[in-house]
Image (cartoon, rainbow over all chains, first blue to last red; front, side, top):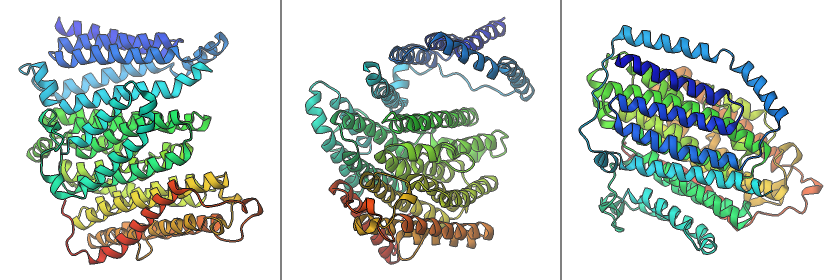
Length: 164
Length: 469
């Protein structure tokens, strides 16, 4: 039963990812990515990784989506003709993508069943504050710098263009 | 003390972007110079560096588990030196105060990223800081928003993120095998279970990611475009520092301290290194764009570092690390010269130039010194590092690879002399009669880097004690 629920969640995640790749609008693509990320965080909660889930939800679903959407708002939208042209090319390019994803997924699951790999025990003992501030302090600083870098990127590469 | 090398640029970045932006804009250039100079002085002062305590008191609140050995110190020296040169070149080539301020912000992020990479003692932290450096580099390449730069940045993003996915997959596999991300724990776990069938795929995948980051053949597609289309100051940073920190240093650190040498690893390193040396050299021979030739030359020279590392001996490792330092010096110098020529002559097309040494004697001389060092001509610094690599390969019985290294050196000499002949030698063309030497901001770093190349080459044979890694 538990595995069935996991598989249903995984299917939702793959559908979200496909939506992000296939949709014609950049804004919808960013929303689809946030949706995929939110579904992934649900899966992480279910797999006893609450810390990773909180990070996925706050950083990937929240902060990164805000960054994407603010960047998209600074770009010029395409005309309908250009959108349809892109759609045609994209559908041609990604025609076989769903089949490849399904085949790879089945292949990987068969390999993992055959190898019978033991999963490492989940880390549930450590308090989140200890993990973030004592064990992964350097990474937290790094994450902050990456986000700042993304903000600089948006400001430097898009802000002037918007004014013009 | 080490934490300060990450935290000081981090807090500087925050302070620079607080209110009073007009004042901060004026201070930013000097602040960055101070940070880079302080890093060089700290690295060259072992007593301060190794004391373990911070005069700023930051270690009390932000104590990180960082590596503090000779290899890290040498890399920190290279970072300080190349970024100081980069900021000088930016002063000359990036005119607007607002643009320059944004550029310095990105350089601060690159400083945090590269310092983090060379000091990280944990494979996931290493990955995080590699990505910080890579993201800053994407924006720096596209900084002027010209069509070719945007295309080069896009190509770089795609290939770099492909490398990131490979490395993240390898990290996941290593976590699966070892249960920890710290270097000593991974090293101990790999030694305890050498027969685990996931080890070699994990190492192989990680190395492929590093080859992309280092721009080695056949993963080099992004490098010539990014290095030639980027602003002059960014080319100095990318070629002089970034590919070596993200690709070469990381490979040296992981192979020597974490993965350990094994026959497949050494074979892959030597094969990719030697193919890059030959291919990069031959491709450089065919270029007429000054910066593009230097970009292909970087592929070739980084190949030497991987070849030395792949020899599997202490001598080869010494040669690899020494060549890494030398390449940071002479390639930065060549890109400074390229910036001077582009700024003064108004073109990068070498077929359109001739006899510029008559009007730009300093640029001509320093460029010749850097080029000869790259080709391994004695007694310049590049000669010794290449000699050590060839000797290490010969002693360890890899005669074919030693021959490839020598052949690569001859090809390097050929394209360097071709560059000198087309740009600096011969009779000066009429349209360049009014050209004059570039300003102080380019002349000073060129002189200092040329002096280092000559001085290291002359002093090296007299060094009795080799550094231990």
